[in-house]
Length: 263
Image (cartoon, rainbow, N blue to C red; front, side, top):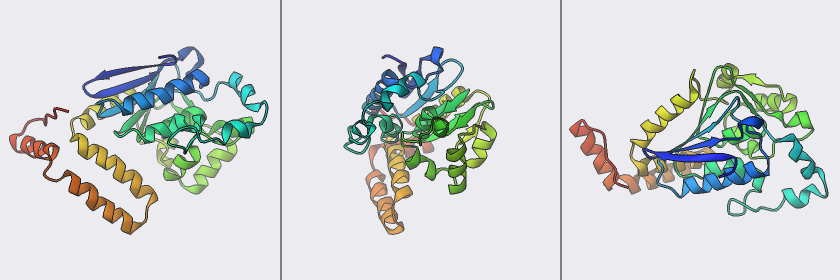
C-alpha cells in the first residue's frame, strides 16, 4: 500500500507510515492510505493496533506542497460534503476518526515531530506513547488555518480548555514531558515502539469481546449522560457474562495459564 505498510502478528496489526523521506508528511496518497488501512484493520481479526512512523518523525504534518490544491476554487465544495464515516466526516477528518471506530484498542508510538495533521492522526488512537525527544504541536495556526482533521472532537477529551486554546492559538511545539503533563501523551518511553508493542501484546491476551466492549463503553461514556452510561454498562456486561470468552478467562485464571481464544 502506498505511503504505509501493515503487518499482522500474534493478533497485533502494526501500521507503519513509510514516507520517511518527507517525515511522513500527509499528502493525498497518505490520506487515502491511512483511511484504507483503518478500514482494513477494522475488518481483520486483530485484537490491538500499533501506529508508528518510519524515519525521523512519526508525522510532521500536512505536505505543504498539497496546500495549494486546497486553496483553489471554493474550499467549501471540498470540505463540507460528508463523504466518510457513515456521513459524519470528510476525507481529512477520517484520517484521525477512522481509528476511533476501529473496534479494538489503537496505540500510537510517537517520536520526532508530531505536528498538525500528524498530531490529529495520533489523537485518533486510544493511547499515545512518546519518546523523550518528541515534539507535538497544533500547527495549523502557523498557516493561518484551524485544526480540521477531527482535532476539535478529540482534543477537548484530553486537555483543559485553556491548554487547548494555548496550543491552538500559538502553534508552539511542546516536548513529550509537557505533553504528558497536559494529557496529550499517555506515557513517555525511551523506545515508544517497543513499549507500544508490549502493551498491544498484553491487550491481545485479554478477552477479545471484553476489550471491544470496553472501547465501546468508554467512547459512549465520554459523550453521554450519567443515566445512559449506567444503562449501557449493564447492557454491555450482560452480553459478556457467561459467554465463551469470559468462561475461558475464568478457566485460565484458575488454571494459572494464559487464556486461549480461538477466534
